[in-house]
Amino acid sequence: MGVVLIVLGLAAAAFAWSGIKLADDPTALTRVDVQPFGGTLENVRAFGPDGRKIPLAVRGGRLFPQMRLTPGERVTVVALVRRSRWLGWAIGSERTERRTMRAPVAGVSARWLTTPRGSAVTVSFDRPVNAVAYGSGKYLVRHGLARPQQSVSLGRRPAAGSIRVAAAARPWERLGAPVAVSWFPPARLPVAVSNPAPGAHVAPGTPITLTFSKPVNDTLGTEQPRLSPRTPGRWRQADSHTLVFQPSGLGPGFDSDLRLTLPRAVDVSDASGNGLRATRRIEWTVPPGSMLRLQQLLAQAGYLPLDWTPAGPPVPRTQRAQLRAAINAPKGHFGWRYPGTPPELRSLWSEGSPNDITRGAVMMFQDQNGLDVDGIAGPRVWRALLAATIAGKHRAGGYSYVYVHSTVPQSLTLWHNGQTILRSPGNTGVPAAPTQLGTFPVFEHIPVGTMSGTNPDGSHYHDPGIRWISYFNGGDAIHAFTRASFGTPQSLGCVELPLDAAAKVWPYTPIGTLVTVEK
Image (cartoon, rainbow, N blue to C red):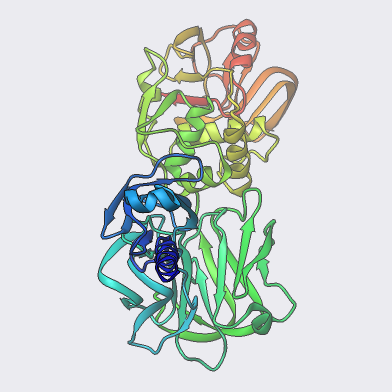
C-alpha cells in the first residue's frame, strides 16, 4: 500500500508540474513558461489577425517578433511542448497552448500641460516606451531611446504651443497613432494656442484649430467664436480642450483680413509662441492669389495663347489642393500653343507678372462666367476660376489677336489659332484725333449701335446703325464704316474697316481679345 501511495503521489506531482503557460513579459511579445515536468518547447508559431504568419525569435523562452507590429494589433501565439517518453505514456506526449493578445499600446498620460517659461516640455506615457516621434508637420521625426522611459523630454520650446507625438512601447513595434500634445505657461486667464499662429498668412480653405489650457466649456461657455467676414463652414469640438473650424466651399476670399471673435477673453500667444496678451480677437491674413498660378489656370482652361505643363504630378482637382496651389504656385513650363505666333503678341507675355495677355484672358473669363468685366482677378474671379478648374471646364473658342498698322498704307491683320484669317486696309484717327498706340483688350462687343461724340472743330456727331463694333480703348473701336477709300487716317480714333471685312473680324473679337495698334 505504501509503495502504491508513493507511486500515485509521484504521478500526481508529475501531472501538476507538467504545465505550460504563455505569460506577459516586459519586453517580449510573450513568454513561454514550462514547468519542471512540462517537457521541451518543440515549436512556436504566431499569426496576425488576417492569418498571416509572423516570424518569431525565441530567446530563453521569450518570443520576439521578427517584423514590425502595429500597437494594438491582435496576435495569436501557438506553442507546442513535447514531454518525455515515460511521462508521455502516462499523460500524453504533446501539449499545445494557445493565446491571443494585442501588441501593447503606449498612451500619453496628459495631453494638456502647464510648463513654466524656460523649462523643457516633458511628455509622460502610461507605460515605458522604447521610441518616440514628434513634430508639427506632416512627417514626424523618430527618436530612439537608449532605454525604455516613461517620460520623454522634447527640449525647450516656445512658451505655448502644440506638437504631435507618437510612441512605440516595444522596440519591435511601429509607432502608434500620433496625438496632439499642447503646453501652456502659467497664466491668470485660460491660454489659447492657435493654429495657424496669430497674424500668419493662411490659404482660404485652411482649418483653424484652437486649443485651450482649460476645457472649452469652462473657457468660452456655450457660445461659439465668430469669423469675419462670414465664412461658410462649421465648428466642431475635437476633444475637451480643442475647437476646430473647417471652412466649406472655397472659404474666405483672397487678399482679405480674417478676424475671429471669442465669446470671452483668453491669453493668446504671439506668432512666435513667446508673448501672451489678453484678447477676444485673433486675426490672420489671407494673401492674394499668385499671379503665376492665375496664369497657369487660365492657360489650362484655354484662355491664353500658351499651354502650361506641370513639372511634377498635376495638382489634384480638390478644393484644398487647389487653394494651396493658388497661394504657392507649383513649378512648370509655359509654351506657345501655336506655331508662327506673331512677334507682337509674344512680346506682350511675361511669366508671373501682370501683362496685357493675362488681363485680356481675365476679361474673357469674366465675360463668359457672368462676372463684371474689369480685368482684375478679385475674389469672385478666383472663386469662379477654381470652381471651373475643379470641374475640369475648358474653353474651346481658340485664341484671336488683332494688330493694326498705323503707317500708311494702314491695315488690320486678324490672327487666330496659328493662322492669319484676314488682312484688310483700314483707317485710323486723323492727326487731330489720333488712334492711341499700344495694346488694349476688347471690353464691349455689339453687332450694331450708335456712335456719338465731338469732332475736332467742336461740333457733335451722332451716327446710328454702325455695324460690327468692338470697343477696345475708351471710345476707340473696330467697326464698319462707309468710306470712298481705306488705308489712310480718316477716323476720329477708331479703326474703320469695309463692311465685309468688319463682318468677318467681329466674330473673332469677343470681350478680352487683344488689339495692338502699332507703327
